[in-house]
Image (tube, rainbow over all chains, first blue to last red; front, top):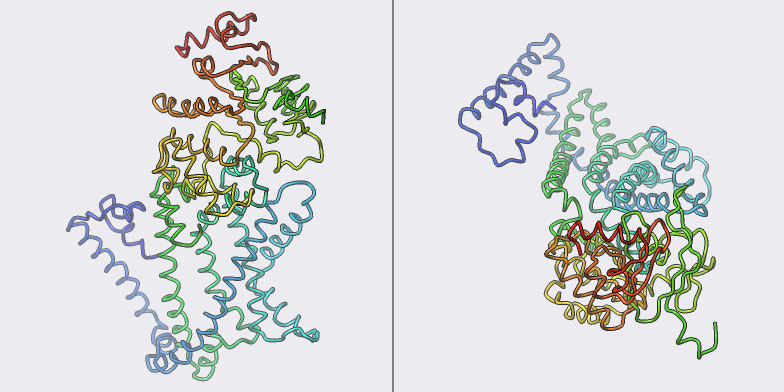
Length: 306
Length: 256
C-alpha cells in the first residue's frame, strides 16, 4: 500500500525503507527522519493536488464527501454494524470447529478411511471453487424457497451457514498445513508410548499445529470480517444495506464512506496484531519456531492451548 | 502357551526369521534372536546395518515382511494383535529424544500413563516425580524441553518411557546426538536400569559402554547377525573378519 511508498520513493538512506527496519530498534538520525517526513508530505501532497484539481472534483466532493450527510448517516449505519459483528462472531466459532474437523478428516491415514478423506477433499474443493456470493445466494434464497417444514427461512441464519461453509474450507487448509508441519517423529514418539492414532493427534500433533497457524487464521478472519457485508444480498439489513438505504434516500454516496471507515477502524488493528504475531514468531529463531520453544509454549498456555 | 513350569524359562523376547525390506532394499535378512528376562543385549554394527530397523520392528513401528516376534509368550506380529496394547509394554527411546516441545517435563512423562493407563493425574505425577528424583531431574519438573541440555532431554525421554512400566526397553543410539561431555549422564541412567534387572536391547556406537554393560553383544552386518557372544569374546577375539574390520575402524576413530 501507499504506507510504505514514502520510504521507497524518496532518497532515503538504506535501512529506513528496508522491510527489516521495523523489527530493529529504531535508531533513525534526525536527518533521515526529516527526509522521510518531507518525502511523505510531498508524495501525499502531490496525490491530493491531483485529486483536487481534477475536472470532476467538485461533483465528486459533493456526492462522496458531504459532511452534513456524513454526520446524519453515521449513527444509523454504525448501529447496523452490530448485525455484522454478531454474524462474524457466530460464524468464526463455527468455522474454527468445522475447519478443524475437515482438516483432521483429511489427515486420517489408511486405506479404510479413504472415503472420509475423499469427502473432506471434495468439500474443500467445492467451497473454494465456487464464488462465495453464489453460495450465499443459493443458501439464502434457494433453500428457504423450498419451504420445507421446520427449515428456518431467516436470511441471517442462512448467511451464517453460507459463510461458515465457505470459510471452513479455507481454514481447514490452514489447519492442515499446520498439522503437516509437525515432524512425524512427534506422532511416532506418542504412538510408541501406546497412545492411539487419535490420542497422538489430539494431545501431541494438534496443539503444536494450531499454535503455528494462528497468524494465518487471523488473516482469514480479516477476510471474513469484510465478507459479512455479502449477506446484504439475501436481504439482511446490515451495515452495507443500511448505507445503501441512506444512499438512495439522499442521492449521495457519503454513507458508503461511513461504512468504509467503520471497516478500516475494525480491520486495521487486527491486521497489525497479526503482523506483530508473525514477527514475534519469526524472531524466536528456528529452534523454537512456533511451539518449539518454551516462550512459545508459555504463550500457548496463556492462550489456553495447553 | 506352554506349561507353567516352562513359563519362567521362556525368553522375554523371541525373534524368528525376521525379514524386512524397504522397497528393493533388504534391511533385515533373517534375524533370529532370543533375549532372556533381565538380559541386556547390545547391538553393534555400521550405520545402515539394520540396528534401528530391528528395534523399530520389535516396537511394531515398522511392519515386518516375514518371520515372527514373540514378547513374553505372545506373538505380537500376529495379524489381529492390538498394536497400542503391545507398545504400552515396550519402552523405546530415540536418538533425537522426541520430547513433546509444547508441554513441560512433568506432562511429557504423565501424558501416556494418564491417557493410556488411565491413571489419575495425582497418581501419575507422584510416580513421575519419583522417577525424576531418582535420575536427578527433580528440579526440571516444570521446565520445557528446549530449556534442557541434550543429556537432560534424553534422560527425560528415558523416564517418559519408564513411566509406562515397560517389561522391555529398546534404546536406539540414545547418545549419538549428544555432545561428548553429556554422554556419561545418560549412560549412567542406563547402567542403573541394567542393575535393576531391566530387559534391554540397546543399539549403540559406544563400544566401551557395550563392553561394560552388555550380557551379550550382537554384531549386525548386512541385515544379519554375523557374530554374537559375551562382550569379552566379541571385543577381544572376534571370529569374523568383518567384525574385526568394524572394530578396527572404531579403534582407529578412537572410540574404543
